[in-house]
Image: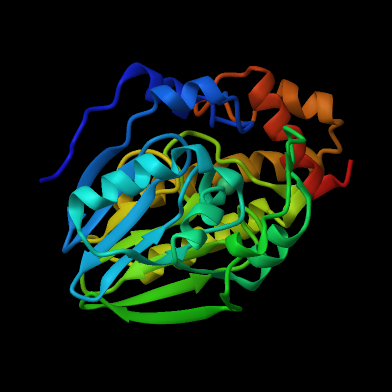
Length: 300
Ligand SMILES: [Zn+2]
């Protein structure tokens, strides 16, 4: 019944493309992407293809998914869900507005799903956005792809035997990131506030903030416990220790950036101190990331 395929190199490469500057997936690549279904716990699954992890809750009440990746993959995603349940997708919750998580919205909207997101995420989807770093332009979605239910700080579903909390923890990856916590199953989808590649993408052009991300990750760590299974925005299933390691990395790098600021270092001098040493290689991507983060503290 379940369709489990192991990751292939192409998917690994596609994931690598997400390291810092999203993204380099061409139309041709989508033809070769396969959707992998991984059971999580208590009727919850994660689908991996290209783009953010898709959380799926199936059960008597119907189907709720978190994120829907790229529009070109919608048919494959719907087919993978149909392997799990014969019920339609009732709800799509967007963890945030970025296209690698939400570009399937129009297809799922047309198929009859209600789309749910934070107020700020909907606002971003209503108009053209330019992403930090890559400068990639994300065009507005048609009405059918826009969230029809939004929330400011919290919202709760009672669905498939779970109280499902949609939690907004402030500016972090963007200014509209939701984390989705299935209380009975004790599974959380963090969106891109937590990812399993090294330094996370922070979209400063759309309300993202390093301080905010660190605060948000601490809030998440308080919300969950050692038995929680974490579905990160990208990458493999994780636990609370992984989340704390990730936070420690961010705090360490931030400390070095703040020290550089106090010492009055120019951006070039800051880079020479290699603040991310030990976490990521000192290459152009790392430097671009560090320069954007440094600017948050120095305004330079
Ligand atoms: Zn994102």
